Structures are given as structure tokens and as C-alpha cells.
Image (cartoon, rainbow, N blue to C red):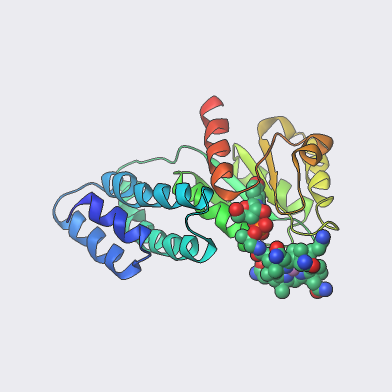
Length: 211
Ligand code: B1M
């Protein structure tokens, strides 16, 4: 197998081919890190770029992400053995009162595709749950998604709760979702807003590298 074949299988969303190629790669003596970075993540980077440029759309991204997950699942224990550490950790969730998770899941997948470890708290996440997750996982970034004008205000409550818990300065806070804007981000004191999932991954990586 070649790493290019693996990257292409991710782009095409061929989960079964990804599994076969990852297993073949390991048998041939390739390291899990090579397979991850030059195969799986390289493929996802291409999809992320195309998504940003409107060359592919949500279904293609989701299918590619599923194929990527199939590969990372198979590599997980080897990556731990090889001591490959993620470049950073992100706690992500859709804020309280909001059940929309398609965009949040795309952001999560792009973050994972950028090599970040993501703790996904799901939907309808209370400020207290965000705070508890920051205490437990000590991430560099808290990422919040909101799709409703009635719930986007809850992003502010999470920031307030982080402040109250004395944790605000330990994390960068990123916000997004259809009704969220740069002006809103600034108004609530978040550190970064991006309009789409691929840019969110770029921004998260930049935050982690600058930390
Ligand atoms: Co809802 N819904 N919905 N809905 N829904 C919207 C959002 C709405 C605009 C539809 C409309 O009226 N035109 C409207 C909101 C109006 C408003 O607040 N201004 C709405 C409403 C009103 C509701 C309900 C209240 C309806 C009702 O029950 N009366 C209800 C609320 C439930 C709740 O949350 N408490 C509701 C329910 C639902 C479903 C459950 C049926 C379903 C959600 C299923 C799910 O998510 N699992 C649903 C859906 C699918 C939609 C629409 C049709 C599509 C949303 C979506 O997934 N878009 C939506 C209308 C629309 O957008 N056309 C609508 C695709 C997704 C990829 O985009 O999430 O924006 P998006 O994510 C983008 C960016 O925003 C960004 O990256 C993503 C991709 O690049 N992004 C981030 C997202 N999070 C980010 C975080 C970041 C950075 C970027 O950093 C951290």
C-alpha cells in the first residue's frame, strides 16, 4: 500500500478501503504516525480545503470523516504505544438549549483532522458541564456551537462560568454557528470566531501553537 492510496481512500470516503490499507500498512512495517499524518490526515486536509472552497459539501465531508475515524480507531492503541501525542486538546459542545449538532460535528472532525484531541460533550451542554470538562481534561481550547438566536447568548454564560471558576485564562474560547458573528464574539469576550469548520481547525491549531 502507499500513503497516497490511503489519503485518497479518505477523500473518497471509502471506510472499508481505509481499514484494509491501514492494516496492510501496519503489516508492511509503516508506523502508526506515518499512516495517520501522511495518509489519513493528509486526505482529510484535502477535503477540508475543498470544503472551504465550496468544491465539496457537507455529505462528502461527513463520509470522509467517517472513513478517517475508521482508520484512527484502528491506529489508536498503536499511537499510544508509539507515544504520539496530539498537538492539543479541545473541549467542544453545542450550548445549552440547542440540539443542533451537524455543524458542531463537522468542526469536531476538522479539528481531529488537524491532529487535535477532541472531547465532544454533545448537545445541550450547560455552562457547568463545560467548566467540569475543562477541570477534568485541561484543554487549551473550549469550542462552542449555537444554531439558534435564542441559544447563542448561552455562549456568554459559559464564558462567565469559566471566569467564576477561575479557569478563563487557562483556555482560548472559540465560538461559531450560523447566527454567530465576529461582533458577537467580541461582545461576549470570546477569543475567536470562524464562519466554517475548516477555518475553525486552522484557528485552533494557531492557538495551540502560540500557547
Ligand atoms: Co433547526 N433551526 N430547529 N433543526 N435547523 C435552524 C437553525 C433554523 C435557521 C431554521 C429556520 O427557521 N430557517 C432555525 C433557527 C432560527 C433562529 O434561531 N434564527 C431553526 C429552528 C427554529 C429550530 C427549532 C426551534 C424548530 C422547532 O422545533 N420549532 C428546533 C430547535 C431544537 C433545539 O435545538 N432546541 C430545531 C430543530 C432542528 C432539528 C432537530 C430538526 C434539526 C437538527 C438536527 C441535528 O443537528 N442533529 C434542525 C436542522 C437540521 C436545521 C437546519 C435545517 C440545518 C442546520 C444545519 O445542520 N446546517 C437549519 C436551517 C438552515 O441552516 N438551513 C435550522 C448545516 C451545518 C453544517 O451548518 O450548523 O451552521 P451549521 O455549521 C456550520 C457553521 O455554522 C460553522 O461550521 C459549520 C460548517 O462549516 N460552525 C462553527 C458551526 N459551529 C461552529 C463552531 C465554531 C466554528 C464554526 O467554533 C467553535
